[in-house]
Amino acid sequence: MSKIMQHTIIVGLALFAIFFGAGNLIFPPSIGNSAGVSWISALMGFSLTGVILPVLAVYAIYNTGGTVEALTRPIGNWFYKAFNTVMMVCIGMVVTIPRMSATTHELGVSQIIPTIPSN
Image (cartoon, rainbow, N blue to C red):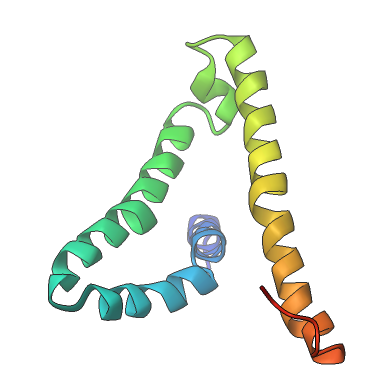
């Protein structure tokens, strides 16, 4: 197998692993079911936000040199630092910690002590 084919397979699987998670497996049928007869507009919205925008982001970063720093260089070095800091704080504290805490509560605490009200 040639090096180009190897790299293509590795990069393809890496991108698949990055973008395809439980949300992309569970949410589309749920969104379609909730949308009812408006499922086409729900499909278009999910396709735009869950497929097209992430692929465009990878393409933009690839075309600017492969780093977010290179992508934000025209704006200024301060923007790269501020943007990265805000994104790390938002992803860590606003998304990951509450999600992990809710999972821990649902799978651990509520099973051990079922009399705690979940309100």
